[in-house]
Image (cartoon, rainbow, N blue to C red; front, side, top):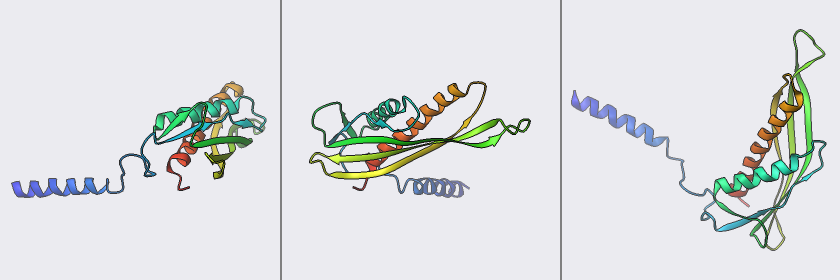
Length: 170
């Protein structure tokens, strides 16, 4: 009876450890944390949505600081220089109210950012369009709902951009 229980515990332990087989501790790009510095230039906004660039710039800086793999520089020479241009902000109706088929209930909101990363010499090391989208449920106040969604979008875009910088194979 004791041997059967021991084998059961051993089997569970082996199965749990197998789940950790692909996990890597520390930075995933092989660099030491803080070994490279990055400067985030204020993003440009070529979309009709005001204030989005400032919010995204702040979110990217915060995400880089929270990640800790790269050292954030505010001025001076950094190993990487990040620039971004918000090229598209779109809001598309995806569902209508059942009692009034002319009133939108949900929008699909998406943002496209053209991201450019240069190294210290000025060479482009990464150039990519980064896209994020979410669903906006219209309530009593559309502008308040859009402000809340823009915060979510910029936070998610910042995570994507940080992951590209940290985990990039460039």
